[in-house]
Image (cartoon, rainbow over all chains, first blue to last red; front, top):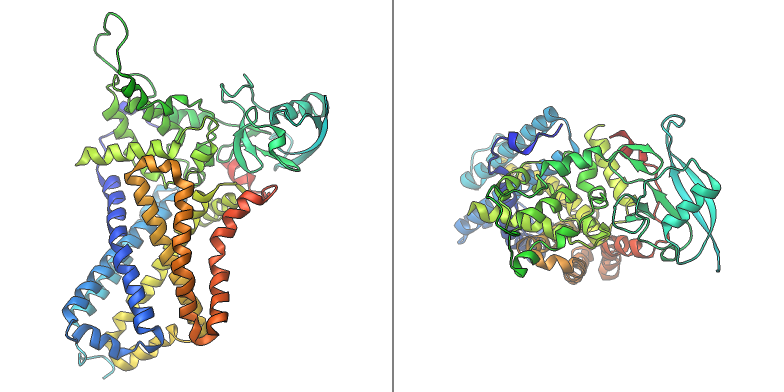
Length: 133
Length: 235
Length: 171
């Protein structure tokens, strides 16, 4: 049953901040994600991308710029996406328990992939030791 | 008086007899300028008296005959049969339990309506005469005073279909009517209620509610104004 | 009902319920967002593999090469561009609610901008394997999704009547 107005505990600011976050990152992504797609698919071309593309992007004269660009793209896009996915999941999952499970799973996935991405952007060297060398 | 034959397809369901809904098909003689409600009366009075529907004033004010007509929520008393080509398909509102035929259980709808404190709140002693307000102050919430609680908006909302915890467009419209009333003092409490997880943030600006409102209320805009108020309050 | 069942029921209801531009924009926005997120997860993982050296990374890139991958690439461009422009429309409406009166018109403005950007882009992406004409044809087939779905709402004499009343009946 619905609680009446006066019994409700004061609510936090998570909902409004999440809503605002989606709009702010959405506007930023409108520029950087669309630019990224344009750059990689029209200027470079997917068929031509290989290991050397990454080497020249991250270690070339504008390496610092591209690494910063990629950090922003990675964190904004994936956080925007995972937060959106939790909103979508909440729309269709009605049980409180399963909501917590999905939410937790999605944010663990977020943490793992963002960490993987940040790690490679920060530490990449063309001659870095690999398990297969 | 020129009568035309029209084919009606009505979703029927009697929980005492049926395990699942079935289509009742009826041919009725109506005038093109008759309302869909008149066609339903024709069925109930002359074809099948067991057809069950709600209607009261039959003039678009009481809000009891909202239903899905050709897939779109409308008041049966506010749409004419000539507005529809071919078969007219009539179904109960989506998202509520069907009690019988076109009647759905509106209790959860009114529970949500009551949850937003849809009444005037002002603890100050009333003045000698009425509480005054400028015309501009009245205009601020004029649109949302038109709501007749027919549930056409709430049951057209895809978010409501999937998450029945969502307070829904109609309740937010009612809250908007008081939140933006200069004489009212319950604004903060109502905003707190709508700031909850099941409140305005569930709205995805789909505009089905605005399209469905038989009173022409800009429902999505009203929800947007509440969101904006909540946002401004934080900064 | 399971979440997946609920999701498919709402998709079915959205087909049955005759919403207008806003409903279709919402459906495509949602599916496109999830699709782009799925690709993003894969993309982060494949970039992570550059740490394993050129052999491993270059071998992984077979995923993105060839004619089938080009078609998926156009699908990605569709999703990203539609989600971006539709998101911009939502943001504009959110911050200037009085513009919501013109929501249908705003949708069509957005649809025109989308078409101007997407049709040449898709054709360009596909021309290597399918030629200009073939690329344009495939692009148009994808592009038609949005306008046809919306126009269908206007011209269809009666809506599809899938039997999803049980969904409403259960609650």
